[in-house]
Length: 156
Image (tube, rainbow, N blue to C red):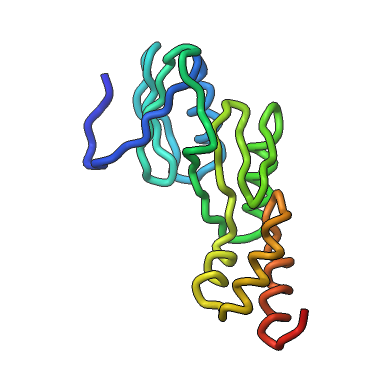
């Protein structure tokens, strides 16, 4: 039985038959993460205070890029760590910070600094940062900083 909590909306993830394995994997990657309930059919877990339910639902459905989880990273080390963890052992790299883990779930691994630049930059700065980001797979803060700073002084 799944426990009730105060989180009104809870992601419910349909896995082929690997919900416990996926939950265990995700719990190794995030702070304040734990499996809170489990049965043969369901596993409930939290990642950074957000509750999820994983279902061993069988092969009828699979994940697509239409739904992803964005992780805002504090620094490049966190970006690198999560990117490597999600894309190794059967995961896949995507464009613009998107990747899939070995279970097929899509993630966006985004530096907090990228979001700050997009929110506070001038139109020229945000355009340059976007131009740098578009061909990237894993996001690189140093490249964004360079583009942002060059645009602020009018260089290309």
